[in-house]
Length: 450
Ligand code: SF4
Ligand code: SF4
Image (cartoon, rainbow, N blue to C red; front, top):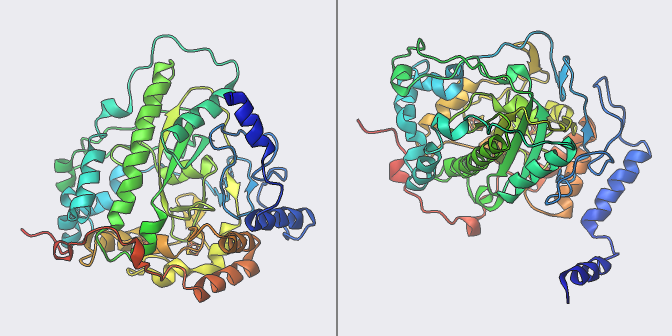
């Protein structure tokens, strides 16, 4: 059969029967239109767009953004809000060296944390993590992330089509989710961290200011791997490899994407695990891929929860940005606190409400405690308990979980219900041995030997 006839025949054979999963989603849409979702509060929500809303830029390779079962609304980006995060004043840019791991490296925390961070010991002590991270380091040089664009700009008569094309490039390169946002100026670091030697001496005098200001950001997200997470506990050798898996993949995608955009004549810089000039959470929110969570500055995606990493490409290529999203996470985190209950370092707050921090509202969690625990964890490589227990991280592709997240995005009462269901079914505490594919070397998990 000629290809075009084959496609037509396949289109005719689309099943008319609705799967249970789609039935639940259709039920969600019907309930929403019947006004069962409750009030929306004071957030500046866009007109009721849904994941299938008209006018939303769609990718040809990934035609529907997969938010799992969550009901997602779109939020206008303005000076008072970044997604559902309220901006109260001037958000100050900060030095990359003030980020938790660099603080450990500089000796601002305990001596043990500095020793363990040095040369990423907490990652490198497991040989598989070491192999992935070593490759990720090869993406570090500045010439990998930036460069001079081609002299001639390719004309872009239809920025919407170009946006779709750039997303498809990222999906082709194996991204799981892609979003485009307006780049918030406070998303850039004030300075890049200096060399490892300077950090160890806590000497920031050679830090280079970040001067780039580009209007758009493409954010690429990669899943950390469901089955591996189902078998892991945070007290094993694979926890850091889950991060490294997504860090190196998003790094590769961002480097190629930035180079491609420069070859089309536009400025573009990749920001990834081993070479950032920007902070990822505000970019992730701006690109419609998450909301700020109870953990402080980490974002949760409606389907993947924390089970992802992102990299980004800032650019002046004319693109059509997506809108930030609201899937009810703020109400959910207010009553859930499952990550706080399970955090071994007690880094995550149990406070009900957010507090002002650097000009915006967020939960008052303590990244120092988290960093110290992760770099010194003598029973494993890093941690990831909060990632595993969060009810938004899709534990399985089932109607039950889809229905659960639909319920969970409907306000505080339903959040409490989903959290209880999640607990009853033991989600987050499971350790499914059949997926334990990696080799452990527990004798290597201790502190570095001098
Ligand atoms: S990674 Fe571990 S220590 Fe850090 S916040 Fe999550 S659960 Fe707590
Ligand atoms: S575990 Fe609960 S409180 Fe923590 S980030 Fe996830 S939804 Fe929010």
